[in-house]
Image (cartoon, rainbow, N blue to C red):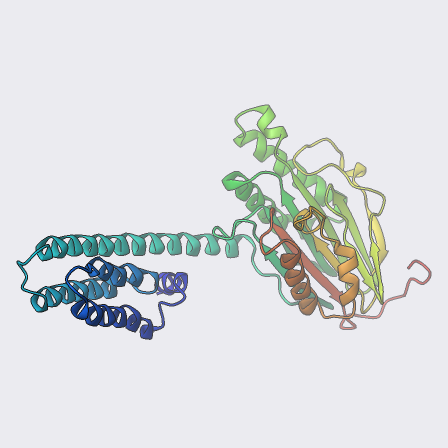
Amino acid sequence: MDVERRSAEARPWGRVPALVLVPVGLLLVLLVVIVRSPDSVRLGPLLVIAPALTPSFAGPRVTAAVAALTVAVGVLIGVLRGGLTAGSHPAQLVALAALSMMIVVFAVVRERRDRQLARAQSVAEAAQRALLRPIPERIGPLQIATVYLAAEQEAQIGGDLYTATRTGGGARMIVGDVRGKGLAAIGESALLLSAFRLVAAEHATLPDLARTLDHNVSRYLVDFAQTEREAAEHFVTALFLDIPDDAPVARMTNCGHPPPLLLHHDRVIGLDGAGAAPPLGLGVLAAADYPDDTFPFEVGDVLLLYTDGVVEARDRSGAFYPFAERVARWAGSTPEALVNHIRRDLLAHAGGRLGDDAAVVAVRRTDGGRSGHRLHGLL
């Protein structure tokens, strides 16, 4: 059922039966014009236009019906203009029938390809939902909204990733970007997300968590990469967040990922922290070498996590998307409204199509948690 629906949506006019009247009306008009025209005027070949138009808005059955009607009109014209065996009528009817049959065959092949594409999209979207399971709209005192824009719209799968999990006293999140494309990138993304969900709550600090995941990703690349060079060229940038329920702060460990933005009242603050560690998969650091930044995150504040496909989107002139500048316009919006604004504005900036996958996660702290101490003077 889903494949049939997608196949119909691939032809947006397919649900409008009234359009069948267009080729039928064309046949009637041509019938009248040809019958009334002098014998020297050869308009019969124009009849093939009717079945040729039909596949653009209908399937093989309707196309076959219009093709049969076209041949019938051709026979009727031959009868009315001196008989079926007179002049070039036999040759024209044979040619008309052959072309009409070819058009029907084309419609059958096209429908099969549409169904194959619809099935592929269904499988891809199912894989995407399994890989990027939706983050709950609320985790403790946090309101969360996400948007994911794949560069390959037909596949709906890319190398960007995000997820969140509940810990004993708060929430832990990850947003990342796998270098590379295709099945290899999907496999690395699936590995990292699965590992994060399994071990996120088992580590006391984010640096410990980052080191464990770095080890897992590095081992995966060694096991599956065919050469050392290939393994070195595959890595994952990742940003880890730990947001406790009972304190107006958030902790961050950045592994080569674009730093998040903090919307505090009417200000947009870039959270560069103490810097970033190398991306996951390189296996070059001990846990103590990973940054462990803490910054204020008070009630009403919004954190924006994103991948480089957002800030590296270009317009026709080659200018990058001014993310922080645009976000400042919607600083008072809810997370859901904020990501919707970003989605529309980003696609408009890029001309409707992105050159790389893009993901945005908006996290807002509400007063749903306990009101811990406040950190004044840091913002």
